[in-house]
Image (cartoon, rainbow, N blue to C red):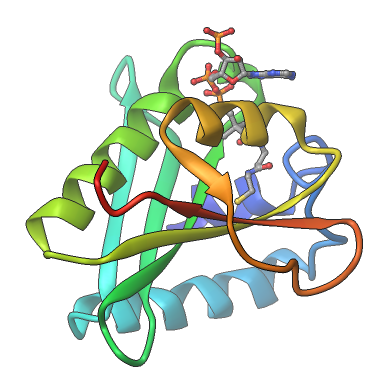
Length: 143
Ligand SMILES: CC(C)(COP(=O)(O)OP(=O)(O)OC[C@H]1O[C@@H](n2cnc3c(N)ncnc32)[C@H](O)[C@@H]1OP(=O)(O)O)[C@@H](O)C(=O)NCCC(=O)NCCS
């Protein structure tokens, strides 16, 4: 998925995430994650807008397979159209269909867009962040 590597390499996309590696390395990383998904260790979705990829969502199962870490990303020229929310809603449907206990997310504390989105979908802070500046969120099992 070349578009996905290009999306994840972009400055606007990474504002609250990290300095991305070069696109070629990102492609290798994404391919590795897709191998995991293909092996049944999670779920991956692509959101389309007017037929073109506009964002993605992923849920990676933890080793116990009862929880999943999620990622969500939207093309910056498609922000604020409800695509991120729609992606998270599909990941929540996956959680229910796969009988998972919880979805987990780690977000930069400055990433208001993501925090607002996830809180609107029932995510809350329930465990210590892996390091200062990050927020660790879980989605209530009842949701
Ligand atoms: C976080 C992200 C996925 C949101 O995607 P999006 O499609 O723009 O989000 P939506 O249009 O569904 O908006 C959802 C809600 O988030 C909030 N929101 C969106 N952008 C916001 C911003 N810049 N500041 C504050 N709140 C914001 C709003 O409350 C919005 O609801 P509203 O439209 O009813 O006001 C997107 O900004 C993104 O891809 N960011 C870069 C990657 C990233 O940070 N991913 C998260 C880490 S895994």
